[in-house]
Image (cartoon, rainbow over all chains, first blue to last red):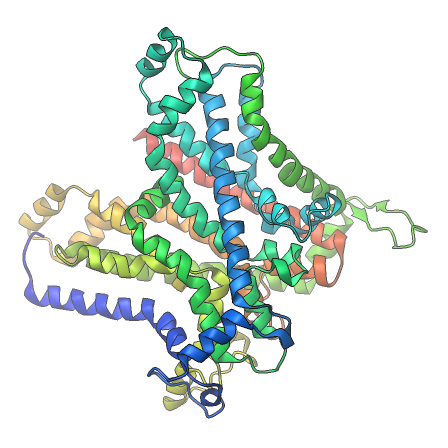
Length: 282
Length: 296
C-alpha cells in the first residue's frame, strides 16, 4: 500500500470480520439447529448455542430419514448424489476433451458447423426448455435411472472451449516430433496431450463436481422413485412434505450433510477451484 | 477459426471423436428446443385425440403477453435479478477492496469468503428461510425489537427481500474472487503516481481503481443477471414457491409451474421460447465483451 494508515487497516479488518460473520452465519445457524432436540423449536426463538442432541439427530437422518413424509434415509440419497455428480463430471470431461482434440488437431469438412452446434448448448440451459427435454427423456425410458440423471447434462460448451484454448497453446513442435517418430493421432493424444492437460482437467473436475452435486431441477423432474432421490432435492421434500411445520432439527442436519462434500472439495482444493472458476468463465 | 499449422489426417477419426458430444447435444438440446418452438405456435389437442393440435400462429404469445400474471412475473423477475445483482456485487466489491489491502491475512480471509460457492441455491434458500422464519427465526426476532413485523408468508415485499438475500449471499464468493483478481491486476505505479499527486484514498478509488475495474464489473453484471434469472429456481421452489400471491413467481419458476403443474404446454412452450431469446441475447453480449477485451 502507498501509505500505511493504522486506523484504516483496523477499519478494514472490522469490515472483513463482519463480512466473514455474514458469510458464515447461515451455516453456523444450521449447525447449531441440527444439535437441538425437537422441543426447542416449539418454544420460540431458535437458540444460538449448541444443544445436546447432535448424535441422535444425525443418526436419525442417516439411517431412517423421514419415512412418513416420503423421504428415504440420507445415506442412500448422498450415495445417489455422489454417483450423479461423478457421472456428470467424468462424462463432461471426457466428451469435451476428445471433441476439442478433434477440432484443434484435424481439418475436416463441417468443422465449423460442429463447433457451432456445441456452442449452441451454452444458449439452451435446461431451465428454459424443461417440458420438451422431459418428454425426450421420458420417451427414451430414462426416467428414474442414473443414465437419465446424468447423460442429458454432460454436453458442455465451456469445457470444450477451455480445452480448445489450452490445446492452441501447446507448441506445434510436440506434434511434429510425435509424427516424425511415427505416432498416430490417438497415441499422441494419450501419451502427450493428456499428461499436459492434467492441471486443467483437475481444475475443471472441481467445478464440474460442484455443478453436478448441486443439480436440483433436473433430479426433481425425472425421479419419482425415492431410490433415486438426490440429497439436494430431498431437502425440499423434507421441508414441504408431511407436517405443516418442518422438523427443523432433522432438516438442518440434512442441510449440513448435503453441503459438506462440495464445501470440503473447495476448502481442500482451493487453488484448483480458483483456477477452474476464473478460466472457465473467461 | 484457426487450427494447428500441421494436422493429422483421417477420414473418420474426427467425426468419431465429436460424435458423443454432438449426439447428446442433438438429442437433449437441439431437438427439445425445436419442439418448444413448435409447441409454442400450436394449440394442444385434447387427451382423447378427438381434436388434433392446431396451428395458431402467435396466439400463444399474444395470450401470454396480455396475461397480467405473466406481466407480473416479468416485473418480479426484473426486480429480483437487479436486486440480487446489485446486492451481491456491491458487497463483494467492498470485501475485495478491503482484502486487497491486507498482506498477511489475505489468504485466510479469501478462504472464508469462497466456500459459499459450494452451497446449492436450494440449500441457500432453505438456510435463509429458516433464519427468517416468522415464529422462530433470529432476524424477525431482532426486527420485532425495532418494531417491524416480519412475515414473508403474508407480505410479498418481505418474501422478495428474503429470496434476494438468499440468492445474493450464495453469489458473493464468485464476485469476490473476480473482483480480487481484477484489483490485483491494476498496476501499482498508477496508484502511487496518484498518491504523490495528492489524491486521497477515496479519490484514487473512484478515479483510478473503479474505472479500471469496469470490464470485470460489466462481465460480472451479465453473469449475475444470468444467474439470478436461471439458476435460482431452487431458491424459489424450496422456499416461497412463487408466493405469497405471485410476489416471487420468477419466469423460470413460472415455466415449470405452467408446464408440469398446470399442464398448459402451449403457454409453457411460448414462455420457453421467450426465455431462450433472453439467454441468447445475454450470451451474445457476453461474447462481444470478451472479444473487445482480448483486443486491447
